[in-house]
Length: 134
Figure 1 (cartoon, rainbow, N blue to C red):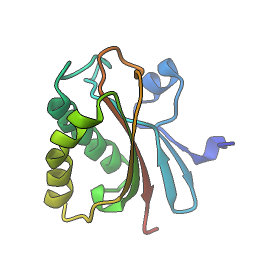
Figure 2: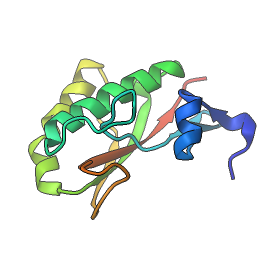
Figure 3: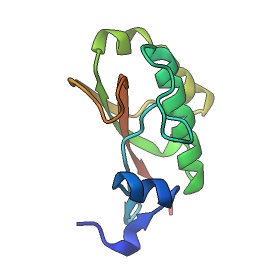
Figure 4: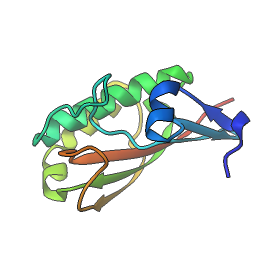
């Protein structure tokens, strides 16, 4: 169970509206809620386009990580929930490019195919785990 002092909010109003905490920190490990391809109003970006959704998710991830003083170098694990694993595989180079530009090694990863996600039309949700140096 998360304790209030472990919660790190990035957008507290949105987090409360949809019922999540963006980050929960225990020691140096930070658990991040899953990221969808959404804009500032939590509207889907890139309907039907896995590559566009991956790009938007990693842009959001970099911004969220920066809010806690982290980068993609601090991501140690990802669980990806995709509605189409073949499309995910075809666009996987975008993910690799983000990690390469950050100078980061690829984290441990798991991909699972699902029937649907929180936002209608979303094709991918990524749940990262981060380990901070301090």
